[in-house]
Image (tube, rainbow, N blue to C red):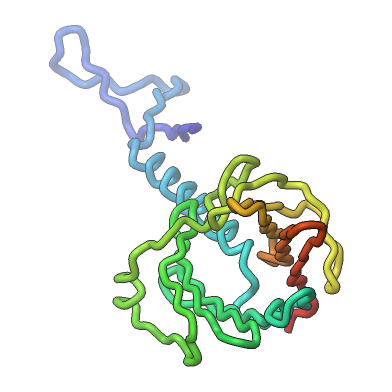
Length: 225
């Protein structure tokens, strides 16, 4: 970091005998004195604070905005149609209510440093979640949701990141630069999920083959309120 230099207010030059102070001659440049190191430290603290704010913005980028209600078109199963409501809570927490027509599941996430953790998951939740700050802080991490930066080979919500520049079509719009997640079960069933910055999850896809038949269930973003 560059240090700023300022001229000293006065300079005392001791004579060879070390008795009388000698004043500098007119026109003689005065030696420069460095500002104490704490100025640099203050600037460094300011930079770190700005970096922290940028990281926080990036963490929020994979969630819908506060108060958003997103509807997903379902195909292949009566419970594939979803409604997701996003609510921002204090202390860097986000609540997402997922309604599939049969039940409502509450998930609460904690944004901290460069990662997001799932700290609460409760099905059959039909009330408004209004915790105190102390109650939020007391929640224990259940699993890692994602960590920045997201790269191929990483895991997001327990699924492997296959691509970070995928294309995905939804009734709402088509997206480029989507993060494609994939997970395959022991029975061969495959689950895929697509995440897009500024939107979060925009599509889920479940595929399973039995004999010669393939079952496909999808939930695709259709509208945002």
